[in-house]
Image 1 (cartoon, rainbow, N blue to C red):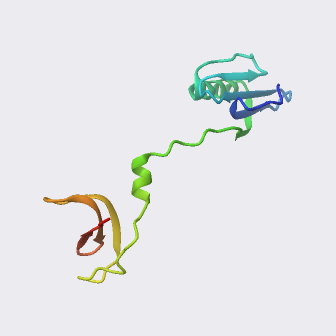
Image 2 (image 1 turned 180 degrees about the vertical axis):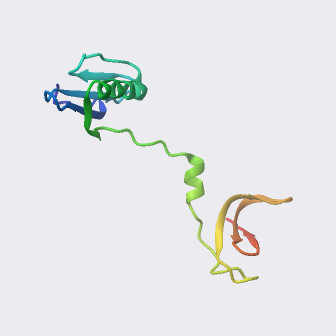
Length: 132
């Protein structure tokens, strides 16, 4: 195996206890190519699905997974809606002015006449829209 692993996204190592035979499975950073070192040496282009099938095949043949680790896992894509929801704006009220219960942020809150980010009471559901 090469020492340059810039093309590898994730690696799985399997070992057979009976004879110490080892298999290394690599999922490449393209998310599609799979390289197998050892075993039957069957490379694939099926991505993570192919990796799962190969691991199941070799475990059925007496191998056990000894290690798996990310090498160059790509950063997960940030969902714009999730990022927006997780960002709580400044100006949170200390408590509900009506009943004193805690107040929470509700992104894209909708009423009959308005929609937008709002602070809402967890008790009586008093609310105040966040203004820019």
